[in-house]
Length: 383
Image (cartoon, rainbow, N blue to C red; front, top):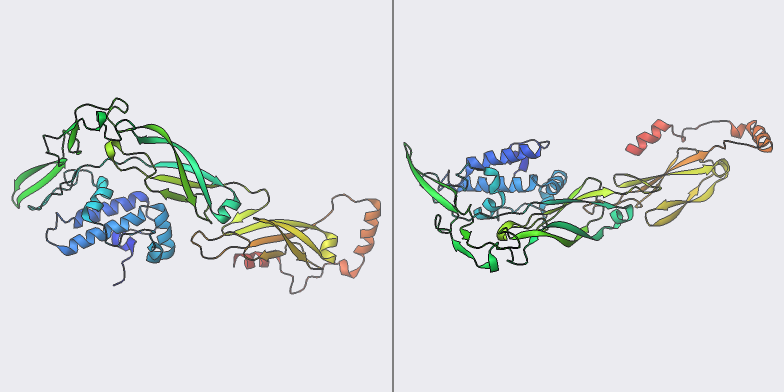
């Protein structure tokens, strides 16, 4: 059976904002939550399906890949877990968006068993901007960047307790991180689980805090991170390095490092998607008699032939001299626009020569069917 469209699953348009996608997922997850639909395999399947859709559409990089290639773009580790995530994995990754909808910890409905899991602290994401030149964009690059962030405390190794052992199991929740309440309703008994108020969901309490981090398990520090940027990235594109953000408090999960791509301006070449643009100025004599000229490329220089009678505005295409597609499908071209340079100042002798030449029939404009207008050239370019 073919996979359903992620936008169809969450019932949102492709233009939906991040908040709209989040709201739609929350609605679907609440509707099909297994505790609300006990012993209903279809509801659990729909619950996982919604989580898979949100896992892709809530990530800008994965969403962009899915919008372009559909489910085919999610293969080879590019996103989507295909139903392979367990319920606990889904709760751990997305549980924070539900707030107190299930008593803060997905309590049971209709006598269902509550999911007893401890709260996992997650470190926040870090966003940095990396500016690349055209050579780096063309070939891909590996960079080492220094990031100031929260790192695991060296003294307590992230536990938050002095010497890493000064803590006890919480007496209120007995280590589960949750407290369960049972209330009688006209529909029967209903169980709700909420975060333990004593240990705040961690299942344990610290008896003596680490002096270095004040019991948080994290401290400010620096980290040298190596990032690999693929070829073909563009200005404004965002990449994600999992687990390289701020460390989570007291042994929690680290956040992600988000890389925002910037582009350095090239002194001669201009980027237009995968193609590169360059204006080449030639003299009237080169245009009339023909010549061989040099033009810059990403990797150096290339020589192109100017045929006799070349008109100003002609666009010459150097195939494969542009930038690669970020997904590795093909490479753009270098488009060289030929501009014929008209002298601004002339000597008396030069004026005389040109006046004499201007009387020749060959120097009078006589465009043929092959000489395209500016409109035709632009139409051809965009096609």
